Length: 170
Image (cartoon, rainbow, N blue to C red):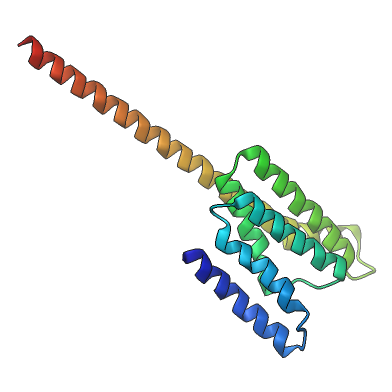
């Protein structure tokens, strides 16, 4: 339900902007991008694949970045938080490659190399890296807490076994 509310919160403004600009062709793309948020925790790889595919379609069609594109970052975060690192690194690579293509496609002409690098790293690649790092650290932290809980349970069982053993000997 939380992810459904998040999807609606991201879809409504993007759809309103598209309708106000007369860009009703953006409605299916926006919905295709936002709907996978609802299923992101249960199917992180599929949700990410759909999001990246819609993002690539946007770049190919020349549709500039809009409000709903933050979904791709959320899906990358989810991929890093719930999947193995090897899978999430592949997702990060896809986002970084998409960032390069988007910068090449949309950057104004006449920019110096330094400006290209700054646009790409700050606007596109930087946000992807931040989303991936946050998700990866969440996955690591969750694993660490699980290991601590397992260790505490083992120690508690061992303590209980010692207590029962002492009672049996007495």
